[in-house]
Image (cartoon, rainbow, N blue to C red):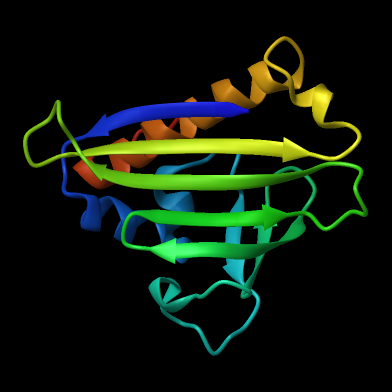
Length: 153
């Protein structure tokens, strides 16, 4: 499992709103996540996406992910569907910060399953992904707090 957190000086609702503003992702992030697109065009507002809806996730090779949660405090998808080889449950959590008054503690995690899950261990690919997730967190923080210089991970 990979787990990262970051403190963001904005309320959870704003952090979630910026994260779910998929068309503007590339305005603050130029790294790991190349694009996130709902596959059902009848959902122009990503906050209305529900479990079972699907996303085109451009993270390395593009794949389809299925939303498992979309609540004010959690956005989560599972994918890719690949017959038990390797898949992940990717989760973003938005909690009121106990460190930054009025702010958010953003959590980003991924839990892997499948016969190749061991390849995502902290001493293998998991270390690289954790660094990339931390870069995304920093970029999201800058995007939410109003600065635009993004990480290139």
